[in-house]
Length: 406
Ligand code: HAM
Image (spheres, rainbow, N blue to C red):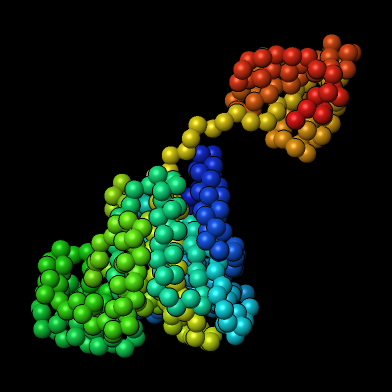
């Protein structure tokens, strides 16, 4: 028997129902916020992710599904959605046209991580990316959208917020941080590697001893320029005015290198160790990094599998028809009636003549509202027998009247 690959899962039955339900409502909310659907390829040139997510990130360093295709191209299955959407934005020349463009997307992402609960190698994200809006109000806008999504699904979350500042303030901060790390012995081997590749990643080391050493480390917010500081204050004051609770976490740096200013993460305390259910932030340099005209950008992505654990769906409502033949002679009429009914309703059927009891059992299991059958008597009289499986009401109808029934 061939099993799915490690860290890869089928979306089937309840999971696929919940997945569609989730996408349907997130898409509706994103459209209300002025975002339009975009779909980008799963496979992209490896250089796209190296230049955007960053050579020093774990994603690029250790986790990429990277291979050479039959044409000798170095390609990669997307580990996240932002890079591809930025590439598409530039490919469509929206950077040259200017103005504001907002996109939402959903689909599979691939990271070769060590699988565990809440951590898959193929997982799904729902994300949004907004281009051309430099105001911190747009950062607030995407965070408020996430809050609305979580409220809709009744998901309790905690929001962590930080500002990484500009390129220049980050350069000064990194220098100070490296000085601190050099002067403080006892950091783990991972931290020492990160000190050389991307020192701010030391801040989110999971090791308790490293965290205790970091208590005296310089704080990123102390290095913000007056403009970045003002933007961070604007963001907080908008969130305050909407009663969105958050915690400023100066150690929140995110695992992708493209962020500046706002960085945020939503955490759930109800799903175990892999508690980050959404993350995002501002990436004003990314379009330029990828050879586009400098354009402001901000967005987020949610991990759908992690969220699905938290979604409680209402009881499924009975819906549609199940049409059944009780004798061989009725099979064709039932089939053509099924095709006609499908123009407006979910309509199921069976290609076999069976007993009333067997058909009723199948219809009940399929959660349809109406059971409709044709046996020898109905064939003779040009009628159907119908039972409402909710109210248990039964009636006999002329075939033509049934066809026209809504
Ligand atoms: P990220 O934080 O790497 O950000 O991923 C976003 C979310 O994807 C995480 O919060 C988590 O819920 C989910 N996720 C990540 N890895 C896994 C995994 N191995 N298994 C299951 N779920 C996972 C990004 O991807 C950025 N592109 C977000 C963004 C959009 N920033 C700006 N725009």
